[in-house]
Image (cartoon, rainbow, N blue to C red; front, side, top):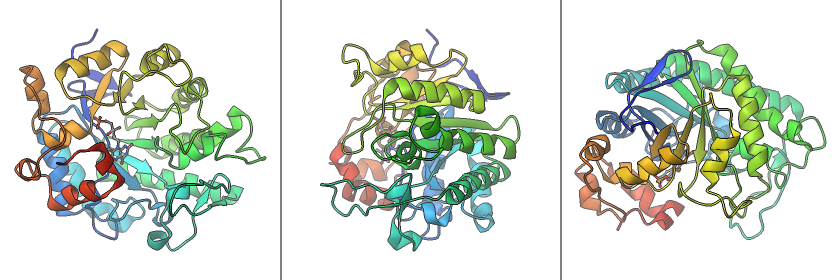
Length: 366
Ligand SMILES: Cc1cc2nc3c(=O)[nH]c(=O)nc-3n(C[C@H](O)[C@H](O)[C@H](O)COP(=O)(O)O)c2cc1C
């Protein structure tokens, strides 16, 4: 098993100094127009100074019509480049691999913010989800437009000086909406069999690979199995897609779970991460997240097959986790007290966002 403090190479020549990454976390603290704010920058700088080998930012929108959160960081156009460049320059000072997560909300894009009705792979309903607006299906021409928007956003991330991007193919956003048999009912070349449902993700990755330098890191985050009410994902299909994406040019895969040791829904006798590692081609490094609150948890993740361990909630409430892990010290666990968060550069905006959003169900703040 690799040590948490050994380095690893991603892609052509990015070196990640240890096996600890910050998990992507939406913070809703950018400016209304998607510009990086001082509080977003201070938050990410605190994480970079904590000593992680890799920092993955919040899910950032790739275009104005992709916006899925209020005050979401954006890479929609060149007017955003100065702020993005300043952020990348700050993070790079800490010799951490700086990765921007790229997201299109699809059916979860918010009309009040985008000015247009939501679009997805298909029209579908989610009965029982308050406020869910039935999206319209993208035309093929619109799909090509979204692919181009991803490629332009990827190019902007590279121009700004980030080390890489991660596609947000987890948690029910647009990539998942194309992959899932529940939300994709198309009958053209983007729907139906697995090749067709994977086509959108594959074309996005290929288009981005062409527009960024060869050493720029591309990662793809995935929910391998669905969470109700959005189901229709199959772990083995997603392993196949991850292997195709590796052919298309990604440098790492990212397994998104709430608990790293959770069993697969399809194979309840197996730890899902072990099953995924066994199926994904060996050369593709895997990042995995979910419930890491101690050095032992992180070591279990490596044992189950992760190459890099991503830390979300614990990273909000604890500064300097890599140092704590070196000394096998205990971390603060959720719920975190507001005062303790304030003392480690967690902004009031972020604390309020977590407290008021559905994430409060995760019981982060006491
Ligand atoms: C405040 C918050 C915001 C999140 N935002 C994102 C996001 O933007 N993109 C994403 O892929 N996952 C997001 N997640 C999920 C985390 O990346 C992670 O997978 C999850 O919290 C489990 O890891 P943990 O137990 O270490 O927190 C978010 C989680 C939290 C707590």
